[in-house]
Length: 467
Image 1 (spheres, rainbow, N blue to C red):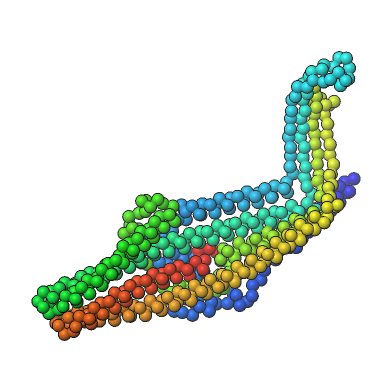
Image 2: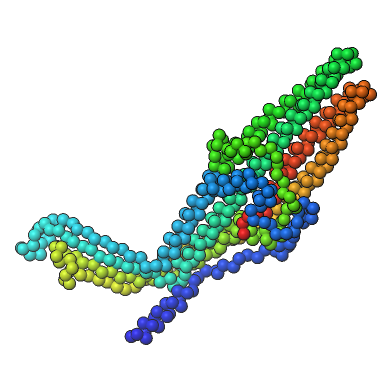
């Protein structure tokens, strides 16, 4: 008898170790996807591995503080964290199916019997009826239905965790971008104010020349017109900076009026002190949270094929119960009132096999869609990274060119003003030089702003900060 029991348990254990449906294997990407980036040849980049906490490359403690605040208080991150908790709870629920389930019940009811129900003349028509019992059941996971369900829940949980990393990356990138928007808006505002001040100086010089008859009043009107045109830009720039401050407050979980004063007063745009480390495609795909989420969803959908396939086979449950029923509380524990049962339960939806095969086909289709989504996510990640690298490299080149143009325009404006005081050049030459300088300064600060945003796009595409 013992030998039979041992053989039965051994056979059951071996069967339980098997699971129907395909075993998951992570998809392989093409070798070219793991190669160095083609857009990383610019001096703005280095082939070193991308760093964690990429925002620290700016060496700005105030920016670091804003990012820390966003990670702690941003509402989108809190929503993502709640979704991770939910997925973790669902995983625990799936794992609980591997354990025996128990049910405990007890009841006490007052009953009145009809005359036909009485077994003897001494039996009372009204009496209390007591009933209680404990039942236990355990599904023998012969074909891996429970195991595959746990695998699917585990994949779903890891996918949601990767989604949460993606949310954190987006919030950090948006926070850095808003911070840079605050500082670059301040720089643009200062350039506009300096331009107006320079034109005010030209107006004073031209006004003095008009007073002594050395310049025409039309020259003064033209200078005044250019000055007013430049001054009209200032309110829009102030509105842009205010909007950036409001955005930064929201991202860091603050009401607008709670933004720190040192952030409001910040006017200097930080820049990384060295070229941006970008690594290669292999490291990128291992780090990008959207790629990890797509791969984990593929694993979950693959496991669900096994869950559906297990319904083709019988489901075996071992169960037992013990209980007692009596008309008096004293008899509940008596041997005459006790009942028990033990034995296996086999259920099989064999007549419904067409419906089960339809579920299997649907699960396989979901897996194919997840594989296509994964492949598309990989291609999108590579595209976004290459595009971000190219955009930033060209933005840097444009900024360098405009910086040289701004220096030349400033030099020409200084020379023209000096010669105007000496009366050696006409008004139109001075006006043209100052108009050129104003445009060059405006173009340069706008290009620096675009380059700063392109820089954030590079970091966001590289997904720095997540291992």
